[in-house]
Length: 175
Image (cartoon, rainbow, N blue to C red; front, side):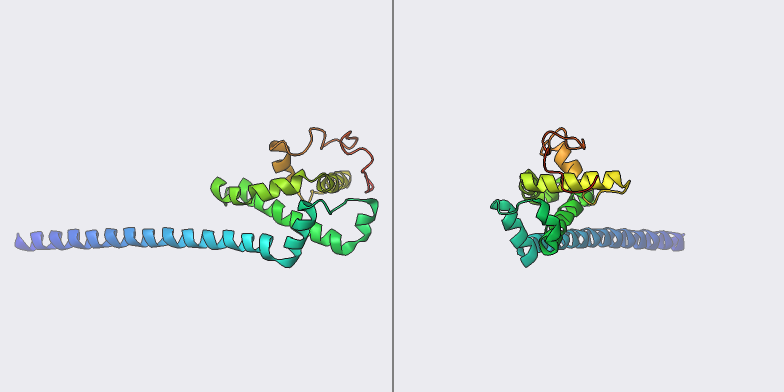
């Protein structure tokens, strides 16, 4: 009988140690995940705010120096910079929509994305890209950014219309 008590006691002790180890491992994994998430957010912040191309392009938009004109599509350097910045904003909206980042994490970027989208010349550019994509039955490069702009009432109600009154006279692409 004493062997049975000893065996059961050892089983309980082993089980308690295993459970404690499992709880500790789960805690460590959770902490590691939090650290990785903060590093991921920091990478995006660093890219948006401190990468020279992104920062310069953001300032052009913020201070009203970016103008979407018919000549814009001939200036491939500026077009690439604007497209890259908008692609990064689109990516942030994408990972938020997929719930890869939380609302609190998204809020770190929300103001910046909002003021970029509020720029009328950016809206004109995105409107042209959107309708050019639709006319070619292709996905739009800025789908998630546009969704954010529409649901947040940043983009006009007639954004999805090819004959928009808001963007009248600003059609610079063939669609």
